Image (tube, rainbow, N blue to C red; front, side):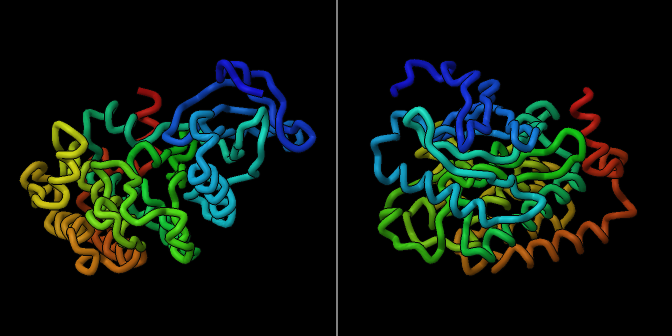
Length: 308
């Protein structure tokens, strides 16, 4: 069955025993379209991500979609969106996952004037690093870490990573991702990713460093009028120090960011555990000198954002 419109899915029952009822369309991604649904069997809200129909005939896309769900379901961490199931309905592949009621960092930055308090930024990055550490321990890298893929729950302030849509199994055959094929988002992609070279945990660390830079300065370190220019600048130019943009960024925070976005992977922290250690050391050192916004904590800050 070929869909003429995505809206045709609203009200449909899909999955084993028709357990998922599609309620509404909530977003579009690079690989798929996302709906909110209700799982009657467990009486809970879920997100259903359907593979775009224009990718349905592409074997590589289908294989990546299957691998996204199967590998993602192995990850069990409070800062990673849970996957409940993988299936096919109306001729389309889908992934059923935890529904996160909140906003992503992109929208939060936009509504907060472009940057967040340093203390809050460190807390968010620490939680993302914890999630990535679990993924890396399972030989999974995200490969497309960016503000749009980091959600903050409305009620609890919990940080959640989503959309491992182009995640790559570190032990998988390179046949699934042809060398030289670029997958990612220009402003957050590491040099080795742009060059189509072998990736590891430090690739995600680079992207996380770019996010931290943006959270505390209001802009990513590598920019350009076109995507190709952003990629070239990432490879060839050195970013402005975050302290030159925001004098509220301490020297230890600036050094951490600069280390995380080094162009050569060997110069970056080797693991997210090391990033977490440095972030927590910085947070402990600045704890007594937090600004009023910082002292609210993630939950307090985000409640203010959602209510404002």
